Image (cartoon, rainbow, N blue to C red; front, top):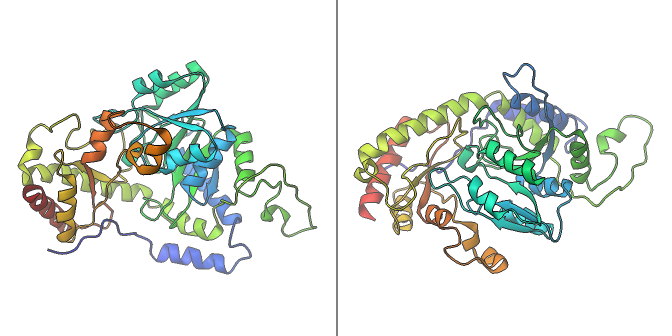
Length: 392
């Protein structure tokens, strides 16, 4: 059986040519390419909407730092609580903890893996300042329900949109119903610069502050001071060094032109998995044991950042081991974060605190999904998963 990697990037000559052109310019770091990419990403988010206002976009060096800076822009600090989900990467909770605040975890909808608005409602207390939903696997959380809760209690919404920019649900896209949304351009993401991120907001004053926070908190960036009479700058608040660079932006800009076509290919691959896997694995033709379905249920348009299937209880790790032996790349997205050592000790949440998230975290496994995956390679993955499923 041929080896199939978990992920294969699609960067090519368009991206290489764009990157080389930056080497011929003055700026390698925070410069005009970043500003152009920010404008183009903002325009992408309102594509097809003739009357929509283009949002402000602030490029960062990662989604993790974008989340941290965004939370700072809401003045989150010690004593504050932010409600989020245990079904996410650790960076979501870490950003809250780095500011001395407390992540308040709530359970998920078992059918989608997304944060449960009813659980959010029950968790709102006197110290709650905001809600941080995660668009798991590239599928939007129920932002209309969350916005209603936020408005009723005077809370902000900050979207963890690390899993895509292409999502849509109930007529909404990232940033439409929130106070800010944060994207990731990590190596395995649908839009990538190796590492990188961006914050989107429709609040101009928040965007201005974010631009300071990403650049140490100084009043003028290098681009503001370049090319004319020297201008003094000032340090106006304590910030970070977490800006996107022109080299990053040069890799990202050509990819924006291909985002929709690549999403369509991933959609076709997802449809093919969901059609062919039940033919290969008899279990998938019947009901899933427990509370989690074999495949997550779809809500609106997904970016399809990941494709996951939920193994029978207690068998996930054996299936992963067998797939590895057969040369198939896999991942787990994710084990519920409150079961991980540091957060278990820090948050003091006992097993069973969030049964839906824990079941999904114990059963989920991710298999290869990327636009250049061929049908033949996908058939190898399906054959291998059937073998692993039956032999585990």
